[in-house]
Amino acid sequence: VDRLRDLVQNDQAPTGVFRIGVIQTVGDMVLLDTLQRLNAAFPGLHTEVASGWGAQLLERVANAEIDAAVALFPATKVLPEGLVGRALGRLELVVVAKKGSMPRRSYKLRELYDVGWVLNPDGCGFRAGLARTLAQQGLSFKLNLETFGTDLQLGLVANGAGLGLMPLPILERSRHLAQLDIINVSDFKPQLDIWLIQAQLPGPVQHAIDFVGQEVERAFAGPVAVVQKVR
Image (cartoon, rainbow, N blue to C red):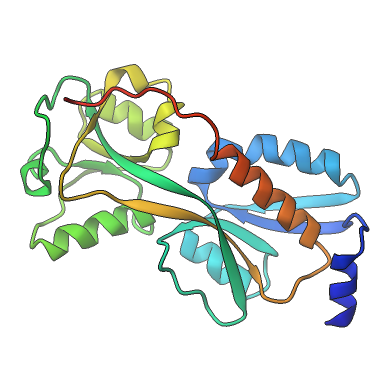
């Protein structure tokens, strides 16, 4: 333990293999630029990136299969023993629909059932949170389509395939933005924190973990675009 702490505390650049897990939702936004900067900052480091749902990445950190993970969890998330995490930012999730298809100023979840949803396959935290909220209200879950890929989901929603549930920063950057409206759902206001999770004891790639954390935090602290909301 003392040797590992000394490695972290010294200003030595990490070398060897750095294994990082990044949930796709975050990776789509920041991974390319982050990897370029990471490689420039630590040229002696070989970075391996894994993707998956947050729970899968958390398990892989706990099993020491990867060094750290960037994932989305509620602020109240309790981590397994031996792991530590810190919040890098917060994502607001918004309900989106084909532009002009839902003109009312506000809706409740029970009023959206007939429209149905376009969501990630089972295992997605967004989908699980929506399903829990519906169940708590005694409502059933109508899934029109399930598919990977935020761009594909937003394109399907823009074509009228159903409602989407999307992080606001991803919607702001989408090529489909002009064909979509944000729907105000008065009884559903989900938010998730962006977590950086690692082993409690620092390892020889701690500088690289911290670098990724700073890059993700910086990316999600950027300016907010103007998005059309239904009035």
